[in-house]
Image 1: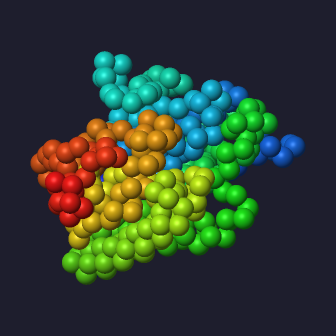
Image 2: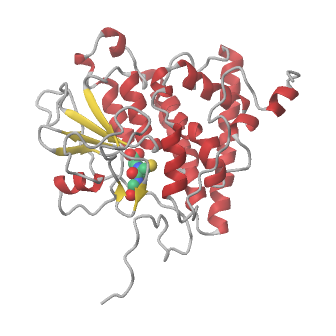
Image 3: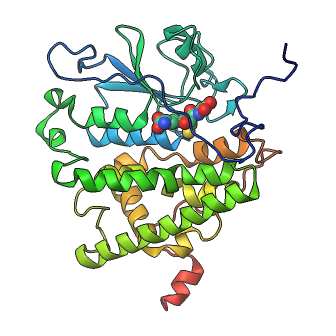
Length: 345
Ligand SMILES: N[C@@H](CCC(=O)N[C@@H](CS)C(=O)NCC(=O)O)C(=O)O
């Protein structure tokens, strides 16, 4: 018999793992919504429900894509409360007023207090983590998929028959760019999207330094890429040119959280975006201020409070730092040092 205390949901790194490195587990539910005849999960208006957290970068990808593709009337959603405690994500209670659309009790199962109940309702033996996003099928009461990289790809075209022309033509993964997007995803995921978590959750100096060094050399590479794009195609350029692609969606969710959270909370403080990466900063603000699918799904209060008040093994007293102020700068304002360097102060 073991006398060991069970591993807590918030123990991101197994205390017995001597490397101190954070290892993200693969998602479990991997079915697809498909418009192929006879598909198990066909595209249907009102059939699917998305569970997200505004704090979570992976869930954020799905919210952006849902709006970019005009799927608001087709796929409903609920956002959980920003606090993740010992029992994982919980739903807001009816009396709580949280910023952002649909941060409310679960409309499908008002009796559920926690997201884990949804996982157990589908599979009482479920042994994985209770993560967001979750794409849920109301008709068969099953979880279709809980892997954001796959959910966004289903949203690109599987619902196109139900959409007006304007949204059908939105194509974040065009065939001509697929291999470049896939190649970019590979290192951006490992070094940047997950790299910030590897830095923040590391429990040894070596694991932290390895992750943070890789993170910043990849940010340097992204800076050079975007600076070149902006020099060639103007300052409104997206990652691969004049239209938004998956590369923008997947990078944005990490960059939007970088200055408000990752710099201090995950110790990613070699540089920040607003003073250290002008091209990335320009690109970030272009997406946030000019594209509603990005701005309206970015909820800084959820983001800041979630990390700092849930991850108490990193931030014992749950104090949320006030800065940086503002969460994101307007397009025509710079931090003083940048403005002074440009002779604008
Ligand atoms: N690979 C998954 C990762 C999702 C994920 O890790 N979500 C986090 C929030 S940012 C979560 O829900 N964690 C809860 C837990 O691990 O207990 C995806 O991209 O969908």
